[in-house]
Length: 195
Image 1 (cartoon, one colour):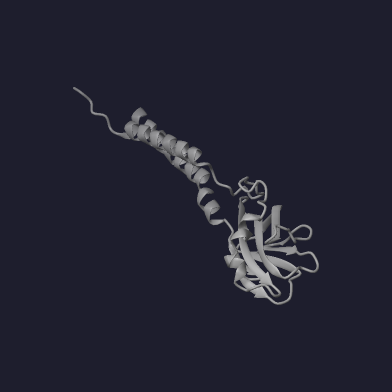
Image 2 (cartoon, one colour; image 1 turned 45 degrees about the horizontal axis):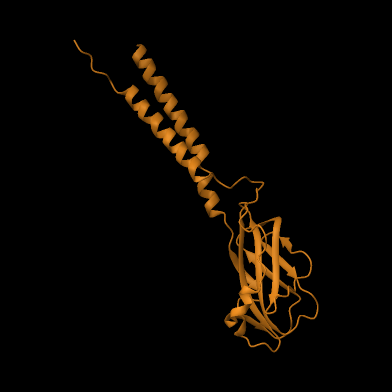
């Protein structure tokens, strides 16, 4: 009778532990899938525009968090032609440009925070006016002349808390669950009695 009761309690404990483990580990998979990526840019990558644009824009797959967004629009001499702060609207980031943008090749370097709370960054090139349409992709000095936005690797806390768990914590939880399951199986196994 006591042995049966112990087995029932051990089984209930294992079920509760497994449920808790699933609840703790479930945010890990969605957090990896929540990273945003670029759907389109204006101007498009490598595009030559006859008239100088008044702004550059990027549309992402997910909404953006209004923290830490940086957009630089830099020419071959290293001058930044962005004017003021980047405007975020849902999944779109728009950066106004200074007036009278000179003819030339430009690289847009951006950093935004996706809805999972992690910063993402990238670049795209365009040219305007009398500049050669392909020069933005072939000029070796363009990328090296662009200042790097600060704190690119620093994660930002998102309000939805969807950042997931560090790998070490996941491993420790898995090891603890495995140990408890092993002990539970040992307890539940019927013991041979010696006469």
